[in-house]
Length: 250
Image 1 (cartoon, rainbow, N blue to C red):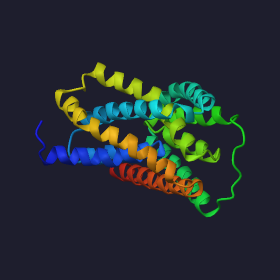
Image 2 (cartoon, rainbow, N blue to C red):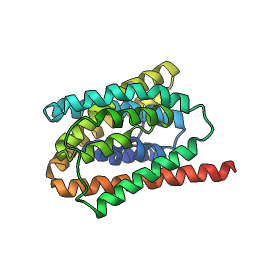
Image 3 (cartoon, one colour):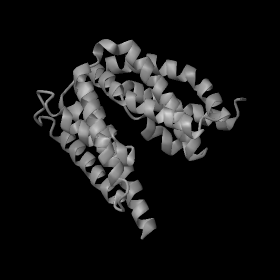
Image 4 (tube, one colour):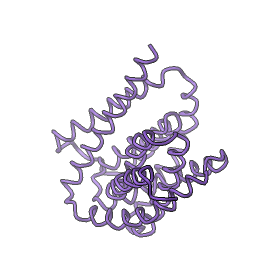
C-alpha cells in the first residue's frame, strides 16, 4: 500500500489515539472511531481499531505487568461479564439514546465535581469493584461503552498513574479479544484492514514507548486532573451524539 493522503490520514489518527490510550489507559476507540468514520466505512474502522487496540494492550501489559492490580482487574472483569447479558437485553429496548444521555450526564457531573472539588473522599477498598464492573458490563453489552464506569472507579481509588494505566488496559483486554474474534468471524478483516494494521505497527510500538514515559512523568495530582478533563470530553461527545440522534429520529 502506497503512502497516499488516505493512508497518511489514517496513520495520523492512530498516532494520536494510541498515544493517548498508552498514556492514560483508555481513549483509543473514542478518539479513533469518529475520525476514521470521516475517511472510511464503519466496518473497516471498527475492525482496524479492534486489532490495533488489542496489539497496544498486549504491549502495555507485557511492559508493565508489575503495575497491574490483578485482584481489582479480576473482580472488574468477572462482574462485567455478569452485566453484559443484561446490557444485551436492554439493547432490544427503544430508549437507547435516553440511556446514553443519562450516562453522559453522570460522567459530566462526576468529572466536573472532581475538577472543582478535588477533596472528594476516595474509595479505600476494592469492595465496590463488583458494582462498577457490573455497570461496565451493562453499558458495554448495550452500547459498547463499558469504559466510563471503570474509569470513574479507578479515579476514585486514587491509584498512581502507572497502576491506573496498566490496570485499566488489563480490564479492557478480554473485551478486545472477543471483539476481534467477532470481526474475524464476520469477515471484516479485509486485505485493506490488514495492510493498514501492518503500517500501524511502528506507531503502536512508538506509542507504547512514549506513552509509558509520559505516564511516569505526569505528577499524581496533574494526572488526575487530566483524567477528569478527558472524561468531560467523553461526556460531551456522548451527549452531543445522543441528543443529535434523538432530534433526527423525532
